[in-house]
Length: 326
Ligand SMILES: NC(=O)c1ccc[n+]([C@@H]2O[C@H](COP(=O)([O-])OP(=O)(O)OC[C@H]3O[C@@H](n4cnc5c(N)ncnc54)[C@H](O)[C@@H]3O)[C@@H](O)[C@H]2O)c1
Ligand SMILES: O=c1ccn([C@@H]2O[C@H](COP(=O)(O)OP(=O)(O)O[C@H]3O[C@H](CO)[C@H](O)[C@H](O)[C@H]3O)[C@@H](O)[C@H]2O)c(=O)[nH]1
Image (cartoon, rainbow, N blue to C red; front, side, top):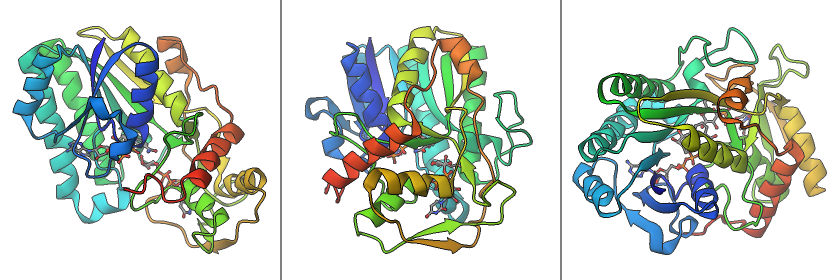
């Protein structure tokens, strides 16, 4: 299939590109490189462009006879979305509407969209099923929810086929060590902990130790980025015009911040200096997926263990201490 991958030079997108290519798809990466890395995308497949450039997208769709879009491009810093929501609504909502317009103009009727567990807000029930109320607690989560809603309306009116994939915590790196996680600034737990192991940071701060969890730190569902890539491939296979899929992508297994630090110590063989700190604003105590719907709908479930996830992350970070260094 001829596929356009927006945000394909970013963390999750680049792993999906690798997986799609390995499975025989003809892939084009579309990324403005604001946060992406040139080296993360195949050189002969990268088109540098912005979601807002609808005409450029139309030209690409026609030129390469694009049949489906995987849409990763977005801004994803929760804290920044609170202080500068305009930036998030403009890029994640207006930018995506421009992409959907270009698709409509060219008759491209399949899209796999990067949504997030942040659309659920503070869960009333854990593990979280897909029909859990969606009530985000920050603008980032709302931008994703708005697009889920727009896609549903476009499905109804224009026969769009879409998959809204609600990721939990994307983690780890490609098994061959060629690509991995490199966000600037980095805010995610695992890369920050591994930076301590590398001597790039003095310590990791545990954000909150008085949560109603067994060890008092927050619980998350860390899903290997290659498992996410596999899910995108599986969702695409099931997509048809007019069809919708709304799926949680997680392992169903919760891991506390302190447990993550412990596994990182084990994998790296280094002691991680840890500071017990205050809660970070906006962090729900526990976010764990119920991944059963994904298994039933697309025959997918997470295969990689937490240890494998951290081992792959460590292989990447220790061999690329400066990330892509671009
Ligand atoms: N990383 C996670 O744990 C996680 C969890 C849930 C959802 N998500 C979602 O998954 C997607 C990918 O996340 P990531 O961690 O790979 O982020 P990332 O920042 O590494 O990748 C996003 C890519 O999109 C590009 N981009 C952003 N705005 C663009 C625009 N207007 N035009 C063209 N390119 C643009 C960036 O340059 C970057 O390469 C995002 O939509 C994010 O919201 C990520
Ligand atoms: O230095 C740190 C960094 C993180 N944490 C904790 O580690 C857990 C994971 O934090 P991350 O920042 O790695 O991930 P989040 O769960 O906050 O973020 C995830 O969910 C968000 C929505 O809530 C977005 O979708 C985001 O892209 C996705 O990675 C949280 O409990 C956080 O409080 C720490 O204790 N110390």
